[in-house]
Amino acid sequence: MSGNYTIDATKAASSTNYKTFTSAVTDLDSGKRYDGGTANGPGVSGSVIFNVSNGVYNEAITIASASGASSKNTITFQSKNGDSSQVVLENANNVITIGNAVYFTFKGITIQGTGTYTTAGNYMVYANNSGSDHMNIYSNSQMTSKQTQEICKINQAGLNLLKVAMEKLSLSARAYDRILKVARTVADLANSDDIKIEHLAEAITYRSLDRENWAG
Image (cartoon, rainbow, N blue to C red):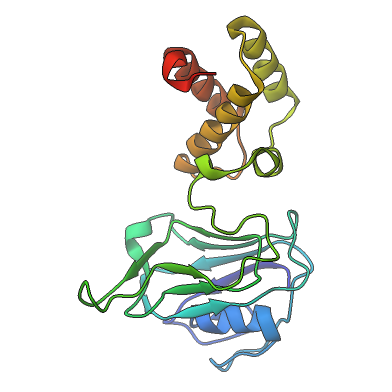
């Protein structure tokens, strides 16, 4: 599997459209579908993006694995129009259970448990984190130095800007990682896959304004 696909419950299932998250996930995992469409899996041979149409998807999905997934062959589920309020994945049980799967991203999608306080399930559960460096990361601030270098990549212009900032502000290696994490967050808020020079500049500005609290 490689390329762009859709998840749209209002359209017929096809080789490029899935009616449910469940069918997309089972195709990735085992090459099987339950919505009547043609299977494309199992596994991936390139980056995969699922553009999800507006709607409330009442599903509890389990992401076991996806062979071929890597830092280059990523798998993204994202709102087709970028509005998280219009694409909702919900269930009374655990909404997403993750096994050994890695390099999955949910972007612009509301994930929520339903039911009463006592019966509602968790948003996301990690069933087995033994094979991944990225499990149990709920925010950018929790990334280790290794994860930061892998996930928060910047281009040469960004490296040059960060080098100048490090020298002028006499920043430590710890502050370097913190700036990258903040820049990644700024890029996420701008719905950008890449950390651009303006995202990095904004992160450096925050660092220079809050040096005492950052203790860098």
